[in-house]
Amino acid sequence: MRVVLDGRPVGEHFPGIGRYVYHLTRALAEGSPALDILLLHDPRTGAPWRELAGEFPHITPVPAPWSPFSPAGQAIVPRLLRSLEADLYHATYYLMPYLAGLPTVLTVYDLVPLRVPTALAPAWKRHLYRLLHRLAARRAGLCLAISQATARDMTELLGVPPARLRVTYLAPDPRFRPAQDPADPARWKQRRGLPARYALYVGINKPHKNLERLVRAWDNVMARWREAWGERPALVWAGPQDPRFPDAIEAFRRTPSTYALGRLPDEELVRLYQGAELLVHPSLYEGFGLPVLEAMACGVPVACSERPALSEIAGGAALLFDPEDETAMADALTELLTSPERRQALARAGLARAAEFTWPATARATLAAYDELMRSPAEKG
Image 1 (cartoon, rainbow, N blue to C red):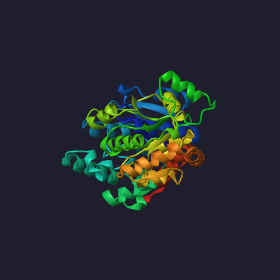
Image 2: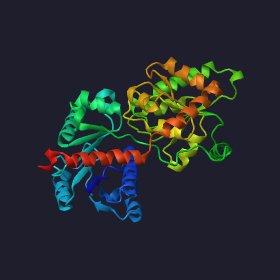
Image 3: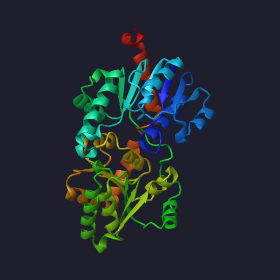
């Protein structure tokens, strides 16, 4: 089978999609040597496709210097797809060529603006977002959702029939694992000037991430802190800081015992997870919640929102709380920070849960969707 996998959305603007495309491409190449993968990429992004192509001869990078946001791509990319004589096109973003001219699989990650309207304002942007998602879903023969929660949202909010939906979960990078030397995290924290104890948040500061409530809940935890509980911990934030949403940034800056580190390379992020007392993920909505699995894979206990995708991915291996209840969030943080036994139990459960998610499994489910679509009478004409 000759498949065009669209890597054009990969770049600084889409770090999550970048992880997905990279790991899916590698896992497909490793598990399916007979699959001919034509990888569309924008040469201006500097994505690591040359490295993958050098490792796997059945990956062919195809330059396509048209952003998914470019209207010109709607006319140019379909011509490019036809010239490649491929069997199938895998769109990795809803801003895709809507007249691709090939059987199409579409990956959908979340529908944040439709579940959390404040995530995309003004209202006309949300209407356009809904319209383009519906158009993309209708043009695709099959849609891949990264969680059951996202699949349900696609049916409820976009009207996509369940028969055209398949769930293909994400997975943590294999680099996310417990420290081999238990002394390494302490040495790393000392080099980075971080406190011995910290709760960790990994992500951006968009409104649906709920950081302002997290900071207020942290204030609550610190107000309760007793000397008998040991050294006072800090709250550390790792991730990009979007200047369009300054309130969360300012809340971190003016709150004692908080650190905002910005975006870190994976090597540093692994160390940060390994040294954490716990991960807190307070999001109001997620399509998946990869930091939850990354922390679990590092042997770090997790406290997270009880919202559908997060509770689905956590699978009973995290301490859940209502993300709109700051007291409940503070209670969960206090429980984990003051109970080594509870942390150890969740760390063990999290390691077992994270092991259930692998990129080879994602690749197998994706390849099954490719095969299913190619067998479809509608696609055979």
